[in-house]
Image (cartoon, rainbow, N blue to C red; front, side, top):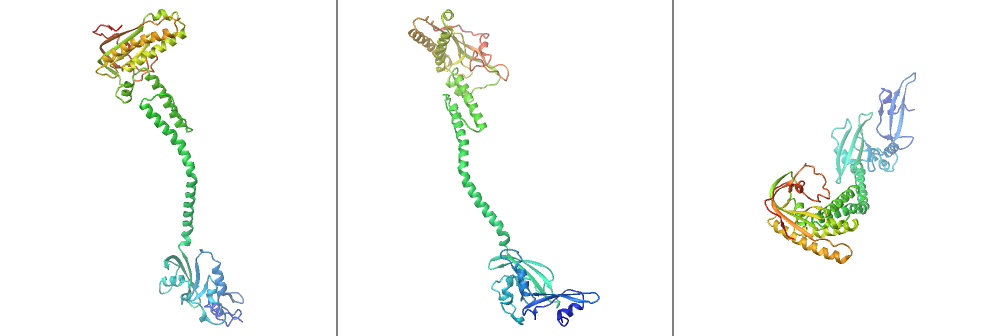
Length: 426
């Protein structure tokens, strides 16, 4: 008959829920608690639920809070009612021995005792969260009050190291760092190969640009790349080098260096300055050209102009144009030198000597062909307006105008009065 038992009478007196203090169950010979509540009807009664402390501990053991979490229920005196490790509650003993209950201070694990000591004095009426250290290790704790029928307050205590919560994050960070390092090591050869594919063409382009800057315009040194932009740049530099190579055939190296250095101006306008004009032609060229095949005539003329160009360039002159067998060159523009007149005179003499040498060479090669006439050279010195004439956007220069000329100058000298007479060397 359960009616004499304390849990029955307490619960039958009102309709509230009641929880007893731990006592020894007669049926199980072990400590436990009883939760009870009255029910109504024609025959009212009390519903009671017995929980052994072992089963309550088993329940706590099944709760997964964190790998190293500690869960326990203690009474107001600090004695264990339940623990995530059920063996700690009764120490394997049975029987009516309430004094055999384990106190939190008896545990080898000092987490619960340290947590209980950190709780506010005078009892706990609401859930409380706290942070505390045990042997230099930081813990997070939570305490919840559990009311009993006698008015005493039992406490549900949960504690876990902070590392249980931030540990996975730290492991992820560590694993990510290791994975990143491994990926970087594996990627280094690929990065090296890709960088070589990029850096090698760029190094070649830099070297090619330096050679162009030094006017080393010899063929070769082409750069190719699988990268479209670098390959386009390489082709542009190659075409520019080819254009400069043609340009250099008509302009002396010293003048080119001054232009490359930025000494020459391309702004519109002109100025009056002294210049020296050189004209040369071959005697009887028109009559000879009528008796020679066009291909042979072209070959002879090209070789002849090669010699003329070399003589003029070596003395700092600028070739203005070729007209048939005639050569027109000038000194004093775009760069003026104090000895331009002397340079022109020496160049004229060199042209005459080169023409004589060329005549003898051609005659020795094929005596059946008509001999080339003598080279005649004329020089004129005087003031002229020289500069850059025309629109700001200069059209490309034709072969007749020469690879380099100040536009308008070639015809300008025909209309400017030179107060000096012609002087012929031969």
